[in-house]
Image 1 (cartoon, protein in one colour):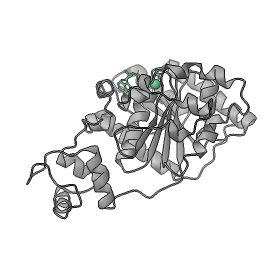
Image 2: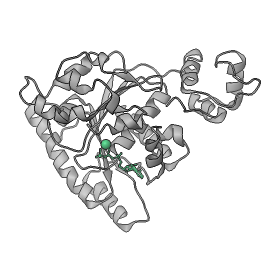
Image 3: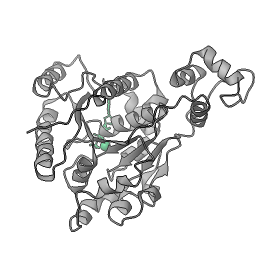
Image 4: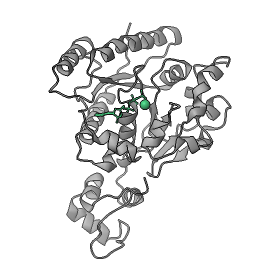
Length: 324
Ligand SMILES: Nc1ncnc2c1ncn2[C@@H]1O[C@H](COP(=O)(O)OP(=O)(O)OP(=O)(O)O)[C@@H](O)[C@H]1O
Ligand SMILES: [Mg+2]
């Protein structure tokens, strides 16, 4: 992520300033001085963080909110959407921790961290009881931290099996960092097991990225049954469930039909905003650069921003879900 640069126009936009206001701020020394006076041509992620601080453009601190991206079905966009969402929150000035729960380490990769080189993963925290702070790494984006993942996570379900309070390990771990973050974004693997159960027990909000096809629709039934059994057996009630249609292509009849079916069956959970099909996701992740830094004008980035706006409105509503 160190290579990420903002154009002056985008930098002003991210800070919520006009070009003139940015020039004024620079004149008053609120933005780090230009490397090539008089006109600066690009800004780094560190410039963004320091400008936010000195211009006092930081969002209000809030109690840590834990948001899980999960679908038992593979390849629905959990990693692409969660890492882009998390990066954008950090870009907006929030303090964000991403937890990569998948031994494939894709969320780590999408955030420019080589998980396979990481000495520690969540395994150390929830099985070996290392303090979570010792497992967290920086991503290069100030305010965006990561618990990386690699193949050592692949046996975690087995290791959890004999442990006491095995469903609550992750939730308990997160208590240690409660005052350090505004958001914890968890990217789950496409499987059903104790780790994902831990993630569900830790989460307040569940995001379910789905593709607009009928297999995804079918998979949702299983997920909702699981959530319902959590409520009944473990007394954990999620605050919100957001189903978000990903990689949507309105020119496909089947996609439109699947969307209509979701609207009919899950009206209270389905987000109005869909994320359109966008090749920039694949391109940006191959470079380890989140889509907002790769191409903020892309359909993917714009749609995730709209999802974020819709979710923020919904989170404002105090509602406890009861599925039964
Ligand atoms: N909106 C989109 N438009 C086009 N391609 C997308 C979109 N979202 C994700 N993709 C692509 O789909 C593939 C799967 O995405 P991703 O890895 O995010 O899914 P996942 O649900 O995390 O997968 P897994 O279940 O393996 O963890 C990737 O190649 C990604 O680039
Ligand atoms: Mg994934």
